Length: 74
Image 1 (cartoon, rainbow, N blue to C red):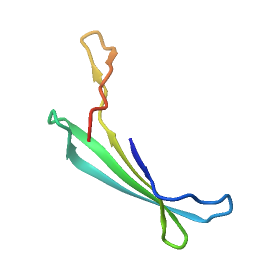
Image 2 (tube, rainbow, N blue to C red):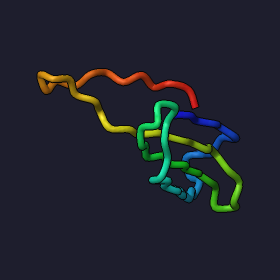
Image 3 (tube, one colour):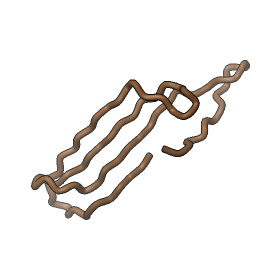
Image 4 (cartoon, rainbow, N blue to C red):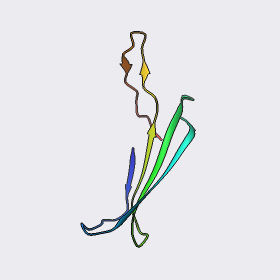
């Protein structure tokens, strides 16, 4: 997850959340991933935070237990 904070907002601020989902992505190993880009904006249109998340399936070993996956770099 990558977060890029642009400005602050107040407790009474009205916010808009926008998400774009990319399903045809691959990571450095060629594995298919799901990536999301989010924007959180003030009602006036000014951006509060930009976020990007990358999701990939968990790997399992021969015994059926889940093997940890490194987050890696974008």
